[in-house]
Structures are given as C-alpha cells and as structure tokens.
Image 1: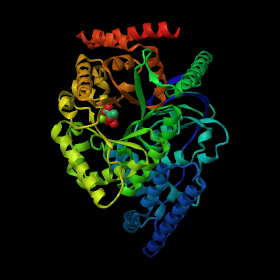
Image 2 (image 1 turned 45 degrees about the vertical axis):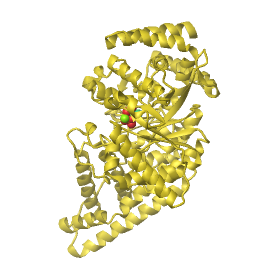
Image 3 (image 1 turned 90 degrees about the vertical axis):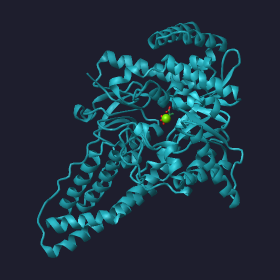
Image 4 (image 1 turned 135 degrees about the vertical axis):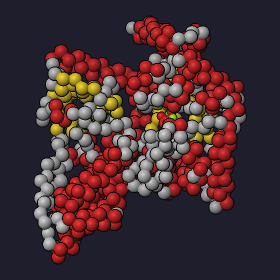
Amino acid sequence: MNEYKGIIVSPGISVGKVYLFREEKITIPKYAIAVHQISHEIERFVQAVESAITEISQLKEKYAHQMGEQEKKLLDSHVLMLSDPVFKEDIGKKVGEKQVNVEWSLLQVIDDFIEKMNESSDEYMMARSLDFHDVSKRVMRHLLLSERMSLADLQEEVIIVAHNLLPSDAISMNKAMVKGIALDLGSKTSHTAILARAFNIPAVLGLSDISQQVNQNDEIIVDGNKGVVIVSPDKETKAKYHSTQVKWHKHEKKLMDLKTVQAETKDGQVVQLEANIEVAEEVNSVLAYGASGIGLFRSEFLFMQPSTMPSEEEQFRTYRNVLEAMKGKSVTIRTLDLGGEKVFPGIDIQEEDNPILGWRAVRFCIAKPEIFKIQLRAILRASVYGNCKIMFPMISGIEELLQTLDILQQVKKDLKRENIQFDEKISVGAMIEVPSAALTSDILAKKVDFFSIGTNDLIQYTIAVDRSNEKIAYLYEPFHPGVLRLLKTIIDNAHQAGITVSMCGEMAGDPAATVVLLGLGLDHFSMSSFSIPEIKNIIRSVDSGEAKQLVEKILSMSFAAEITEYVENWMEAHLAKVFN
Ligand code: PEP
Ligand code: MG
C-alpha cells in the first residue's frame, strides 16, 4: 500500500479500480525529402489539419447534449489554433529549412513551442501549452492515419490515472463512468481541475509520478477532501475508507436534508449562504447544495480560455445563462480580477517584479476602459434576466472606487442612449481585500450597496504572507488578532452605513471560523457549493448570543495560536454537546 499527497482540486471520496490512461506512443518517422517534395509535404499537413478540424466538429456534434458553453468554447479554440496561419508557416519553414518529412517537422515545432511555454513558469501559459500539445497530437494522428483513443467509450466505473489529462479528453470522457481522477500534473487553475469541479468528480492533481506507480486495474482510493491518493490499500485502510465513505455519504445526505431550510441560528438570526463559481457549468451544483445565491462569480476564468478575448456577446450570453439558471436568486459577478498570477497572452500585462502588488484587477481595468466597458456592458445587459449584482475586486481606496463607479456610470449612460435595457437599480459592491480598504471602509461604505470580504488576499496583505508560498504557510493565520480586528472594523463600518457584508474568501467556508464570523455579524457567507450544508448545520446549532460572547473573548487575546486553540476547543466542545 502506498499513499501519495497532491493538490486538493475537487472534493469527495472514491474507491475503485485504476484506468491507466497512457498517452499513445506513436513512432514518428524521420526521413529526408527532396526540394521538389516540400510543397507535397506541406499539402499533407494542410490535409491533416482539415481532417482534425472535421474531427473536432464531429466531436462537438456527437457530445453536444453533454457539453456546456465552456467545453464548446474550448473546442472552438482548438479549431482556431489549427486554423492559425502562423502554425502552417512554422511547419512550412521547418520542412523547407531542414528538408525533412512533415511529421518530424511538426514534432520539432511542438517541442520548440512547449519548451518556450514551459520556460515562462506561468501557470496560464503552461496550461495553454497543453492545449497546443493536444491539437498537435490530433494532427499527428491524421498524418500517421492512426485512430484517436477516447475516454468516451468507457463502459465501467473507473478512476482515471494519467500523467496528464488533456482538456479535450476530459470533455469527451464518459462522465457517468469516471468516479475519480488522479494526475501527475495539474494545478487548481488548469482546465482539467476546473472541469473536474464542474462535473463533481473527486480529483487530486499534482501527484508527481502517480501514473508510474500504478498498474491497470489496481485498486485505488482518491480522497479529494484531503488531497490524498492511496494505491493498493490494505484491508484495514480499505475498511477505514469504506466507513469514511459511508459516513461521508450519510453525512452529506443528512446535510442535504437541510437544503430547503434557512441558515438560521437557534434564536432566529438568518444569514445567507452563497456559492463561489469559476465556470457557468457549476450552477447545477450551486442549486443542488441549496445555495441562496452566487456570492462570487470569478469572471476572469471566462477570459482565461485559450481562445481570444471573449466578445461582449459571448460574455453577455454566459452571464445571462447563469442568471436565468439561478431563477431570481442573486448572482454577484465580480469584474475582471486579472493580473497577479492570472494573466493570458491576449492581454498586455508584462512580467512584473511583484505581480501580487502590481497592475491587477481594477487597477488594470481603470487603465483599460476599452476592455472594462465591454464587460460592464455585458453584465448590465444581462442584468434584466435575473437578480444581478456587480462587485469590484482589489479596491484600495476611495479614489479607485470613485473612478470605477464613474466608468460604470458612463456605460449605463451609453446603454440608455442606445435604448438598451438594464437593471437601473443594480446593486454595486466593493471587495474588501486590501488593508487600506478595510481601514477606510467607513468612507467606502457610503458609496456602495455592499461589501464582500476577500480573506484570501486580505490575510495575505495584512500579515505580508504570500498565500501560495508553502515555506511561510504557518504564518497564514485567519485568526491573527490583526486580521480579526480588520474584519470587525469592516463589518461594523458597513453596518453603521446600513449596508450588508459578505465574505467570499476561503475563510467563509471554513467550519472552524463559522461561529466567529457569525459573532462578528457577517451577513452573507460565500463558499464552494459543497461546503454550504456543513456551514448551515453549524449555524443552525448556535445561538447568536454565544457567538458574540466567543468573539468578545477572542478579541481580548494577543496571540494567534492562543486564539486558534481557543476557537478549536470551543468548537469541539460545542459540536460534542449539540450533535452527540
Ligand atoms: C479573495 O481574495 O479572498 C477572493 C475571494 O478572491 P481570489 O481568491 O479570487 O483572489
Ligand atoms: Mg482576491
């Protein structure tokens, strides 16, 4: 039995047998060609590209009923890559310069491209290199006249183990048969991670060499809650996981019974539990888990697709679809939070020394009104199809907020002039995730309808601790007295101004923090859909008075560790009292 630790990407536990999805090994021939054969070789490439494009169209048609907008768009982007004249030019150059067959030339072009992309150490660029690899492989198969292997034909339940899963494989796989995914590669923002979450398949990625450690049909456990994979579990572990799985299902089922009840404390204080989404396809699970709305739609993921910048029309359709699917429940669309680690080739953000403190989010949008206005137009146009809210990320002070609101106002004016309908009373909020915004939240509160606290960034900036640097992870403390004081300041200032406060950072979905946030007076909690039932369960078990007392106590403490321990003990004692 062996245990491997990877990245938590999609929750749930699966026990099953390995389906080892190996990249097909194709032998690429290499032979010299004469000058007069160059045009013939290029023509062979053109034919293979055409066949690949036809194949993608057929794939789209065949699986149209299973595909969401995101997936269709991905395939469209592959067609765009294939049709790019630069691709053909590069191949032509290689064939001409080296006077070798087209298969070998294609291999060289792929290698050059992937090397360049991987050198960039940029997560987005690396993900794009996978797309390029994917389309090139398809062309290669047509050149070699080989058949494409497909996960669409899976006929029995399996756990897919692979070095990597290309987006087109993930899209076409028979999802009903895929019970889990474990990959060597991958990050939280890779396409496969996004799709696994959207399809509700437990997944652990970034496992280094799991594909080398398993054999076809091995027994395997994928624990998406802990980011752990166990190969060939012994009897004891299997029994343990079996009971964990049964408990998890029972627990989930029991929690799901709460789907239709409110998140209400024992003394009647009601809070809203909303969901965070990255792609429109997640709406189904948002509804399944009983979210009262979407508290954060990370719209930048729409822009991080491999194709070009989404048009106003494309954005409008996506926002409208989400709003309609939510049937009147509120949908808070966060405007572009690009920059930092989230960049893509079509956008001219140069490498910066400190990207996390750099040209990002509203700073970028204010400087690029031509991009920002298109998004605002799309959101406003969609706003008549449901209960839509807009919120701006990374606001650092009143000047930035006013500039942003001014651009929104201009877009509203334009739409009015064009006689295009939108919700004129649309709620507008500011994310509070920069300490300067938290400390001036009394000023900001007068200009917006709500706040949403982004604790992922707020904690990172308050304690000066990079949220993705493992070496200093011990410093990333949600219960640091500095963080707690800021949270109190934000919530109190918002309430004084008569506006509501939401939280959409990970802290909102952390069961250890629920009672503290309740005691601080948070109105809306927004989190991954699957966390909603558990948080609701906790909220329904407490009295708002005891939550306030807990907060009063911890605000008098000086040490983060002391507070964390106190809250953990309090929660343990509380849960034991209430649920046993
Ligand atoms: C946050 O910072 O808490 C947040 C919700 O935004 P993101 O994680 O997308 O930066
Ligand atoms: Mg943030």
